[in-house]
Image 1 (tube, rainbow, N blue to C red):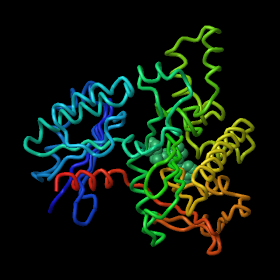
Image 2: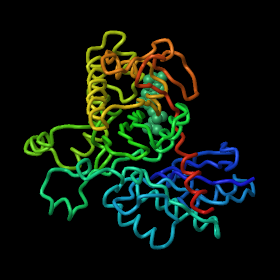
Image 3: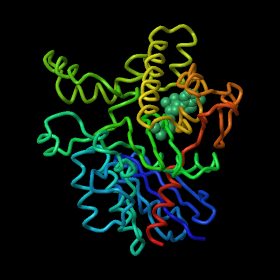
Length: 371
Ligand code: ADP
């Protein structure tokens, strides 16, 4: 059996999966949590040695690492060398919460699995195809250049997997398709994908921009920050406010969409408003990307909310028959784990649900690189 070992290393946890490369099935997987806390693994190196033990002698052909920020440098999956490690470290300025723990996982794996190739797969890489008009912020260009300020976009690994799977479901070449893909999890974003290339996406320099998320605000007037700053809020407070206490949580009282839907259903006005704002933003981007792409062949929903919430999908695309977007309510309401079509047979624009699989995409890219 040829396997790929997939690592998603966070600040206090390592999620891992062993994928059989031929069948593309998950062989084994797990999560080491509370790294650094009493009674748990002391650090990422110790956690990785523990995982090595759980692999039961299995010797992976390649190790694929999820890395959040690849900046402007990494446009594709990349073999890890000392120099690549240093570049990922340098990019920590852009993703201070994510790149350092990602790197800790890479370093631990290089020590625990000597002789096995490590491949870094970046969340940002897929969006490096964005045109300047889409990635440039309209600020002082010297400042933007000095601080590497531009749109990078995230969830790229998911978009790559989902767009390819959507093309297969439609039995059409990806190169000929215009897709709008909504990745709606705790973090949420949407991408306009033309012929397999990302041409616009809602997350920006950081994952804060764009859609309303569980605890992140998404788009807002930057002037609000100056206003709150003048009112005495510090930068760390504002950072925490917008990243951890906004979005569905800030408006509706819970960061979990299921709670919000239930509360709204039983008459909670704040939850109902949070839901309305969430849907309003989805439709805002749907309209924008239909225009940017010049129409769409399919609208695709993925991740926790996109795969499971029929009411959210319905709210995003309802009343758009005049654009050739027609949901089939019965198909939308049917629960399934499979990739599926939920538009009517007559709908010129297909509407799809495609479960994402970022681990498998990382495995594919890592294997393709070492073969
Ligand atoms: P992450 O971004 O952490 O990977 P997921 O993709 O697993 O998250 O998505 C988690 C989100 O999916 C949660 O906010 C949860 O409320 C939402 N979710 C999962 N199932 C449902 C459902 N049946 N209805 C509405 N929301 C759901």
